[in-house]
Image (cartoon, rainbow, N blue to C red; front, top):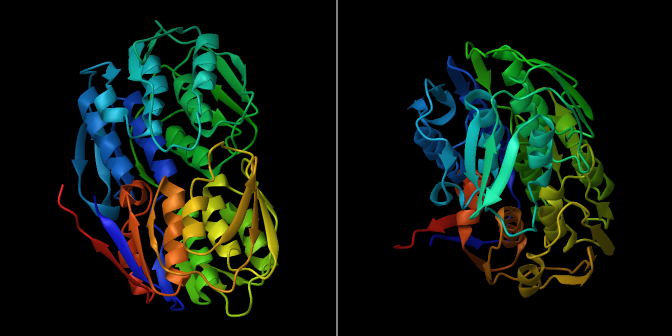
Length: 422
């Protein structure tokens, strides 16, 4: 397995461009299963999870022309080759469950392995299955697979006990071809949900309210894939680079960052003393003075994103004072704490709260990543620490950050990937 080596302690300065959002690309690529037309999708990030869903789409019968990089893909789904998403293809990626709704809606059947992914809690898919059952599908679970059958889904009123992002997306996709009107209440409001809705509307879907907590979908008989869709910029990647400016005492312009997608993060960065300038093409973060302490509570959008919790914890480790991080979205999402403490951080855990007492410096050390965002927090800590840091199990990083070592190198970081033989 590859490792990331960092010699820290240098302020990062310069411009960095945000890649397309993984959490928008995955559902949009799954949505190409819904219609027979040719879908043109650009700004797709080159990530491990994207490669996984490409293999899954090919297995299901999609024909994909990959022009590479931001130039994007052309995708067609002329006919169903297999109705199953096998464990071997989906075991590393929870987003694989997003093919469930499109397959059931267009082809009337789907058999999808229960998903894997990061070890940050159970994250059950019961909301997806409850919604599909309300739409008339027959749902069974056996031998580690979910099986869904439906001659044609019917519109329904669905209330989500939690504003699940993938649950909202899966049910919204399924409802596009259902008979009648579907209303999803307590829907997730994330920008990635709205981006998926924009793609579906371009294909002929009738959707209103995406980006609010009530989404209404009027089913149509078929969807067309005409037109080009550009994946939105990755707001979590953008937030990670803004935090990098703060933790290293540098100045970074994050090109492509949409400030409204990161309101809660920008508010907290300003609160700790980082100068944030919202410009026409992105956001600039300038640090240099002491880092102030701050309390943070993770919440569904538009609250502070759980996917920025680990990065902000690394930043708070070097603050002036005591910070409290309250994690309300996922259980088991403090796995990075033990590794940050190996680098000298002073962090105590009580239930779903982390108390972070700022220290004067972090020290480079060998550490191990446990999930995607934990990996990012260790990179930030390593860039700020004195001495050398070696991060193992960085395959987690490759699931969500495109060329992260190259981008940080371009900002002046002394960081490189150490290739390991299989």
